Every structure is written in structure tokens, then in C-alpha cells.
Image (cartoon, rainbow, N blue to C red; front, side, top):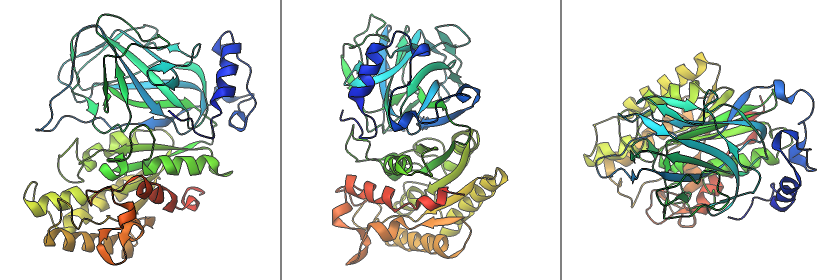
Amino acid sequence: MTPHPLFDRRRFVAWIAAAALGAGLALPAGSWATGWGHGWFDREHIGTWAASPQTQNATQVAREFAAGTTVRQIVRVSLGGVELRVRFSNELSTVPLSIGAASVALHAGGAAIVAGSDRTLTFGGKTSIVVPPGAPAVSDPVHLRVPPLADLAISMYLPAATSGTTFHNVASQTNYIAPAGGDYTQAVVMPVEATALNYFFLSGVTVKAPEHAKAVVALGDSITDGTRSTPDTNSRWPNTLALRLQEGRHTDHIAVLNEGISGNRILSAGSGPNTLSRFDRDVLAKRGVKWVVVLIGINDIGNSARGTGPVVTADDIIAGYRQLIARARQHDIRIYAGTLTPIAGSGYDFPAAEVMRQAVNHWIRTSGAFDAVIDFDALTRDPADPTRFLPAYDSGDHLHPNDAGYAAMGRAVPLSLFRH
């Protein structure tokens, strides 16, 4: 995987190799180390990466893991820090989840980790845990200096045969599954039997960050999740936003948490819990969240129009938005809305759907209900036919952006929204 320019991997790897133990490592040179001095360890954890748990829909079959399988999953953090915790999730399963061992390390590419960077994860001091159905499990903190926009490899060993029922479907990231029979959680180069473009039983990473650090949650459906973006390139629009925030002198303390779920709806169950029901879990329960960007509703509209979901009206969607607004403001969170992007030529191309999309977008733009509006529709539509995606931004299904479209969306979010 090509390292991000803000992360000089060669310098960082050389520093790691020269160090004996992580807790006593000297700080390397580089802008990402700024502020990691006295007082850091008195600060609190804040989310730096997230993936919203969901369950399989009727057309999906859960991946089965044989007893003794190690899974290594790769995540791109937004905010750096000196200490981290990992959150595993069994929240949508009906049977206990046994984690026999787990570790976190800096990713070196493929299924490999940076030698010397691996840290054993413990849970209440124990190296294994059984997570009850419906519950998450948060690891004890471990010291690991993580630069912003770095890739982590999180490995978990499943001692018992396990069905991957709590998962995140669209990872847009290659994750690695070892042959059954060995605990490879701390292997520098893990053997690989299979790969998956999903996340399993993994929902978050937090870091100990500066006390003024804050987070913005991107809450939405597949267009926030990054569906049809190029795997292993971190081309989702929230990734571009995270990059821009890190490059800004006044915004490099802000994390971005992507809580998009492909197929998600605001009002009814589709792929994963509806947005209203998961708002507490994915936004309000997260420490340090000061802003949320909502881009949701097109799946309610499209499925209603084609008869594959509950019938809804524009007023129903708007009522859902008003609930999100009210709940965000109860927690002093500023809430911004993205307008719904074009659908002509897609599987949602029905006259009733387009009428409803336009009505919802008109309300978003003119009601003043949200704290700000990000006009993704105006950005991505074709001026020659505003009901369609601009060809340069169309992934080919006329519903989702391509990498260029996602990058344009991430660049279109004004950074001034996060300076107050």
C-alpha cells in the first residue's frame, strides 16, 4: 500500500527498528510529533477510526471461520496519538464471541506489520475474552505512537468456529485470513489463505490525543461508506476530508469517523439498523464529537419508489432529519446536511423518486434547519442533465461516485465549518 505523504514510513520504520521498547521510545523528528510532550498522558481518548456494525441482509451469507483462525484487518486512522484502544463488536450477533488473542501494530503492507511495533491487546489484564451477544469489548490501552493518517493492522485469533455475523460489509480494504490452526496475531508476516473486503467484529479505534482534540462523524449510507471506490486507496470522501483537516494548521486536532453503511436508510431497516436507531451508538456515545455530517435518505426514497421498501414521503424523510437535529443539539453537536446526489439511470430511476429527492433537497437547502448545508448534489450533477451524475464523477452505476467524485466531495466540505 502506498504510504500517505504525511506519513514518512521509511523514517518511522527506521525509528521503530532502533528502539528497544515502545514505552521508552524517543520521539522522532517530524511535524506529527508536535505537542507530544509533557502532559500528554493526562489526556483522554478520542475516536480516530470507526466502522458501523451491521448484519447480513437476505442475499448475504455469513463468512464462516474455522476454529483456530487468525484475521488481520487494516484500518486508516485520522488523528494520531500515543496510546490507543481497540473496540471489538459482537453487538449484532446472537451467540458469544470468543477472542483468544488480539494485537495491534503499524501496517507494513499486505498482511505484514512493522517489526517491533506489535502490541498485545488485553481486556481487564487478560489476553482473551468472551464477548456476550449484543455487547462490544474495548481493549485496555496500549502505548503505541501512531502518526495521523497511518495504517494499523489489528489481528484477532478465533479459537472456536465462528460465524461472522457482526460485520461491516463495505470495507473497501483488503483484510487477511490465515490458515486455520495457528495464532498468528503477532506474526510479522502472516500466512494468508483468503482475503475479504469486509470488516469482522471490529468497530473502532481510539487514541490518546491532545485535550483540545475533537471529532466529526460522517453519518450516511453507501456514498459515505465509499461503495465502488478503489479498494486499498482510502478514496472515500471522509478520507479526503481527514487529509485536509490534517493539512490545516487550525484543524489538525480533528478526527474523522466514518459511520456510513451501504444500503442504510434513515427510517427503516435495510443494511444495518436504521439511522435513527443507530444515532446514539454511532454519534452520541462517542467522546469528543462536536460535528456530524448527515448524508442519508436516498435508499428510503429509491426503495419506496420501486416497491422494495416501505412507502415514504418527503415529509417522512424530513421528519427523520428533524429528529436527528433535535438529538444532536441536545448534546451540543453541530449538525450539517449533505444534499442527496443524482439517481437518473440508476436502479432508483423512477419519476416518484426524483420528485421526492428534489423536494427533500429543496427543504435541506432552504429550511435553515441544519447548522449548515453541503451541496453534494450541485457538486456532482451534470449541468447538461442535473438529474444525472457528471460523467467524470460517475462510477458507472449512475448512483455512486468514482474516486474522483469522492475526492471532489471531500474537497467541497468547507473547513471553516470545524473552526468553531
